[in-house]
Length: 166
Image (cartoon, rainbow, N blue to C red):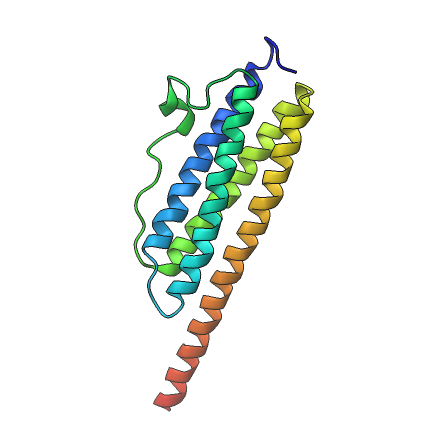
């Protein structure tokens, strides 16, 4: 596969890498700003995801180098896109919702890059990307469960308050 016609794969991997950087920053900011009764548990889960995304960025960068590309090209702003993310505050529901959206965007990006790799018959890259898709689907599920747990705790607290009023 390593040859003159792999630029499309390199560019798609650079785009994946840029999106991973954004998701990693989102995870890091969210974990740093977690508060509330479940803040420590949520922070730990988000930090685990951040570490995993960070390691995956190294693997993607290595694959780009194997293909004779540069992980961060000269026009890095074009790869990463507009401003990475705004810093998020301590609103747990909002932060987790944004992380869910980040995983969904990452999955879409990985699927598109997988299509490019498969079209170029680059099986090793396609295999890496398919594995990443599964990982982000699992991570999104974890975040969804955290969000569902918070919502059910909120509902229980609200029910107790209403019961105390009557």
